[in-house]
Length: 332
Ligand code: PMP
Image (cartoon, helix red, strand yellow):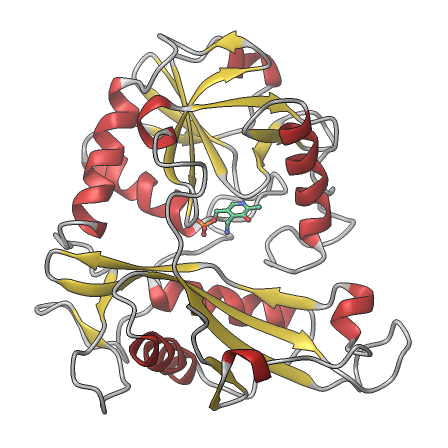
């Protein structure tokens, strides 16, 4: 179904949400965006970590000197309104902020900043069976960008040229996904996922300074794992650590928690989902499927048709006073 799209504060029919061919973003990749999921939990439709995603959108825009003319709360409300009007119980939410028309040079400072938000139905990104069986991946020949080239912490359209090269190579080579190394050779992340490694009961992931996008699912899994008593270590590790890992898994809004069963045809652990991966995956699914949310991560979609402001899990702080609890710089 083609649902209405929120365009600069108005709901617009799907087919009318168009852009001009001379939009700066189309020529120079000057867009920032988010990927968010709304789940049909047993306790009603709820958006996962809405505030943290909208904060990252604002951060990404700030890095690129784009001024979004909407507040965090207005962006949250835009998501709620678009979900409500779509009638979808679960969906993927895509806010997009980009440089539109203006001048046609590289300098985007005079180009209008446009804000769109669309929703659509989306199942498991790497296939439903991948969540149980795991995926086969390769180490990509393309590297993540170096920190002094352009900012990995911004979720910007242009970054995904690199990601698309990695994903296309992986698929054409018969793999599900590619893992990128940083320019100094350490393991960074997948084309659209963060990566975790388990060895001897300890959990490792690349630090956020290692040219990764500091993922919101990554933060959620680190929180769940630490709460369950696991040591989670953010550190650089080399490619061969992947091969000798007991377990590997990806995290991301799209991929959720997806086990990796092989890397470059090396079998990882037992060659299927490992026990720690399964435990963390189950705890994560308890939140998003059962709606059991002791973390304040879910924003329930109001049922009443006319109300377009977010409601929170009963017992959590109000949306206005609750601050996003991800600090991407914390582990630099
Ligand atoms: N890395 C990259 C490059 C991504 O595109 C994504 C997906 N947004 C992630 C990691 C995972 O981030 P999140 O858990 O916030 O979706």
